[in-house]
Amino acid sequence: MKAGILSDTHDYRPAAEGALALFRAEGIGILLHLGDVCSPELLDGYPDLGIPLVCVFGNNDTDRDGLQAATRGAFRQGPHIEEVAGRRILMAHSYRDLEAELGERGRFDLVLFGHTHRPLTMRVGRALVLNPGEGCGFMRGKPTCAVVELDTMEPRIVPIPLPEPR
Image (cartoon, rainbow, N blue to C red; front, side):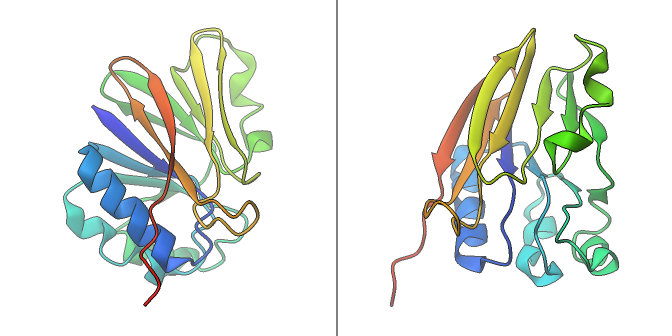
């Protein structure tokens, strides 16, 4: 099973739609958003895909009730632990929010965070630690997301395709 991972979309609809198209083409089985969606309207249509959606709140997600309503309750307070395809996944918006959970090595297969707007993949023991970068592309000029093959734990940071200007 493939997981599509997105963070820091910051209300940038072209990138959110581009990521969605990319995830559909990849045939992902679950979509994980690491926060800073900002307004609920950005996720319009995501719950209708038939793909499970699990999200954690970011520091810019102020309309929490609206985000919960738009995603049919997909948001959690981080750090959040999710079991997917036999893998234990630890999710939070900021790495700082993960530190308390990371004390016991070997508990997680995949550790996910956003917030820095910088893509990162590294291994710590058996865990894959990943930041998909910024879905919005505002700071680095390149919107990115990630796809992880959960069977093999192989990650890819992927540029998000943006629609051509009209």
